[in-house]
Image 1 (cartoon, rainbow, N blue to C red):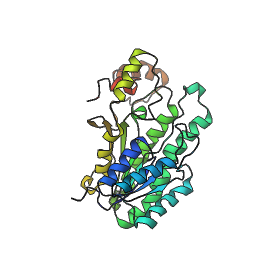
Image 2 (cartoon, rainbow, N blue to C red):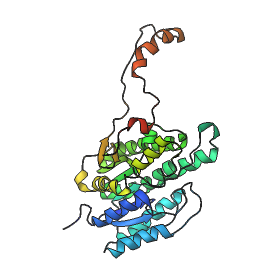
Image 3 (cartoon, rainbow, N blue to C red):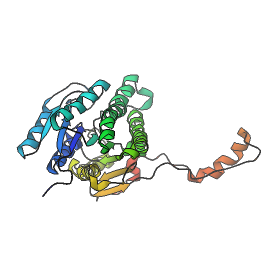
Image 4 (tube, rainbow, N blue to C red):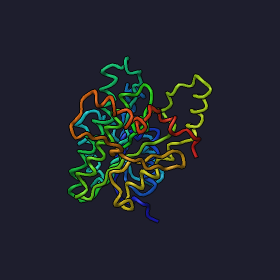
Length: 304
């Protein structure tokens, strides 16, 4: 029986470990030919190791699938075209892009350095743009294609010490939406997923208090393999008509996130002054202000 993405060609960045690895393996199981991109860096982006990407390729081939390894960095915009070219040279086309690669440089904001900021933005946001742009021309020519970008509830809701990561992940939301709007006329879809899964990206969460230890124990139940089915589905033709959306996967739960729209308004025909705003704004808008919650406070129940 043919898989849901039979004979499609997929590129998955950051596919050597964790969520990316699980996605690459399931894409292959469902019939796709996969470009496994991973440079094997540490969580903070340092170092390199070609081993993880090749190990995933070997695993796919052992099961009868088709895959190649790519071990060049998406942080260099010129590499995006090379990665896409390798897919086309090997498999003849490209149909699915999964922008999954990322690094972390968590710091409380007043201690965050420029490199902490720029390196995270470079990999997550610039890398996602470069890969998407490199695929877009080919998707347009074949009048089809699906892009799936990884965002985070750290950006959608909030977290401590992650202003760089939050900005990058919210930038990815805007990128995905922009692609969806611009490319819909060419039958190209773009969606974002905020994954909950235990791995290196959340393995750095502190476990000093009993509450933090309990939270981490719950997170460890959420394996990367739980994320892959939604990614594979969104990459398939079965997901036609789904574009510009934000999803989240949390163990066996799948969420659809709302997107920013006006919720309240105030008006004065004579216009506003600071004094008039002081007299009216807090009273009118205060009950609707979004509280400074963190992701863990919004998703306060145990994973299902």
